[in-house]
Length: 66
Image 1 (cartoon, rainbow, N blue to C red):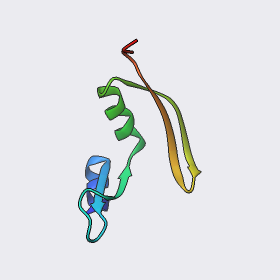
Image 2: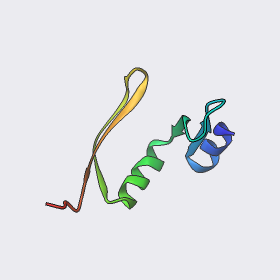
Image 3: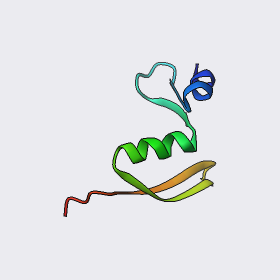
């Protein structure tokens, strides 16, 4: 389940009971940074455990549309 996926892939997700595509995710910092880079995003700031026990990440798009 979520722990196994997290250990193997750096990302794990599981739906809340009775919901589809709505649940809890565990994401390794390295997985997120890699996914952000592939999506053309630059990570500006990463703060661990600062918002109700959750990490906060600030990103910006590298290839601006303006």
